[in-house]
Image 1 (cartoon, rainbow, N blue to C red):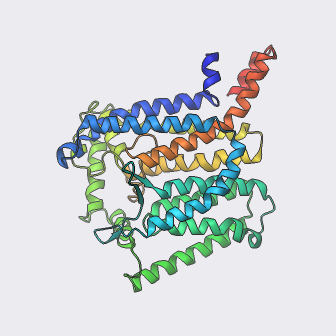
Image 2: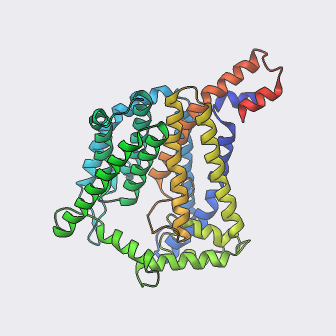
Image 3: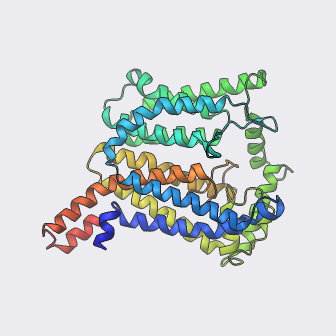
Length: 399
């Protein structure tokens, strides 16, 4: 155990929880990939399993090396990466990828290795680290002084993501507001920002409606998804997916049909990503779905514990800023499958297929583990120095 502690730093419980979710993810990925194999006729189930193994493997390597970096260095890294993030988003937005008349400028293809990279996910993580850094350094927030150094990068990145991915832009902006609220940002100033953002978004929608050819957008897709969510009986593609998701959940009952025995995976177009939770319930029942929710809640609990134990304000805010979006995204994905929210396109972290999302999630947890490693190292030093004559005290410090 001591040898492992020398290699893996940080919160041990969080390491175990992430390992459990990652191991479990191979079962639904292998099962749901049959949709792509037999219905679409693309690849093999074992091929998708190996691809997921590669993605998760690279993700844990990124997490391992990231958690070795002292978290204070992420302050400067975020400042340096904000301009790069904006440049990548601008380049991605100008690629001209249009699918069925909608803006599909989400991925940046790296020709050398043939991998597609979702720049919005990378930029979101960079921005949240930048937000944590700024809020920790500036305690007396005055909106006039915050416009250029703080809110301008936030609005630029959110607006660059918005035309092609409304749900990601909304989630990012909501997480920024939440982080500001937690840090003690004045409520009056937050209300001003929210009002300004709402007016800007309304103007954006109005301009696009009047001049639809001014820029590629997905407003029709947003409208269709919201209408399908409100009018659940309409026969649209979104309604088709939701209906199949409901059938999968109902079929699973309490114990499920068994691993690999899902039927609806062959009818859900996004069975391995957006609607993988429905497949999990169909195969493992509501019991399996509840256990998965409990795992995410336990991760949330560890994030709060790490934030509370952090020795600096930056460490506390950094843990919250990069951790809460993952948990919120998890329950957003689950809520879509349960028809609590409209279809968003958000994946289930650490489980759904997809490279960039999994890698950014692992990087986020690497940052959180870096924060937690500081106080766990202090506890280990006390143990080595012989200051462990009070086992209850040490146990309370590790919880």
